[in-house]
Image 1 (cartoon, rainbow, N blue to C red):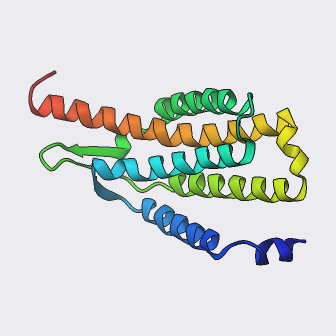
Image 2 (tube, one colour):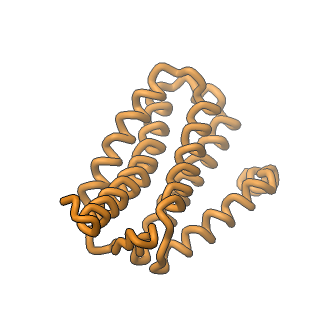
Length: 171
């Protein structure tokens, strides 16, 4: 069964996995990034998560509320745990320097593999779409992962804004 699952996986899925691994490894290296580029991966992962939820569960009444609650919780968790020392801001260049972190790689792979596993489960057992517990568990995972990306982004933006305010003596 595992062999059939891997053989029947479209090539673009493996290309996406390779892209996520490359982006994740790059995040393990400290780098200076423009503010706009900070939005790319959180928005891409958000789109992947929402697409996965909609394609898998459609208009299930439990899906969106479970996802939203978990997204808020993940955002709050990331905001609280994000190390302020891991970012330096350069408002004059419109950039931030982020220390390397393997967390984005782990989150991207987690979203990918949850989405992959859900697709396999729904292919093998389509009735799982009607299982409220399954729907909620999957949507909570998607929401937590996305919330962590969003919370990290918001925390970096807040640090950047405070650096801009100090530079221009707005604080």
